[in-house]
Length: 110
Image 1 (tube, rainbow, N blue to C red):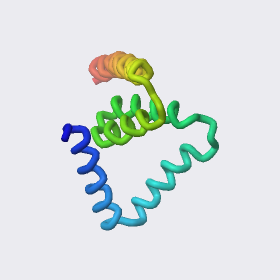
Image 2 (cartoon, rainbow, N blue to C red):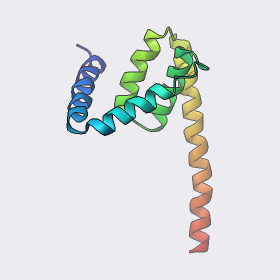
Image 3 (cartoon, rainbow, N blue to C red):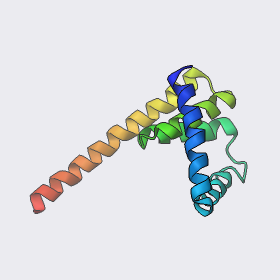
Image 4 (tube, rainbow, N blue to C red):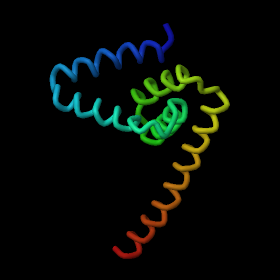
């Protein structure tokens, strides 16, 4: 079994355990996730490409696991995944650039 397949199995177990321990929060999270798809403006593939790029920028292995699988299921190609991840890389670089300016401002003010 590959490490990502194993991670998916572990993720399902762990979130299932959390759902039993804190049902209201688990239900609220599920409602929030469902609400992101409710209006149908984004098709499933686009939704998952965005989610995967965000998962990378937030460094969430569980999110990467779930959304990579969902993107594949929604028909995303490797080229589409790579393009979305390229956007995530650029965004992280941009955020570091902006926050570097903020760090210099803080240094100068303090």
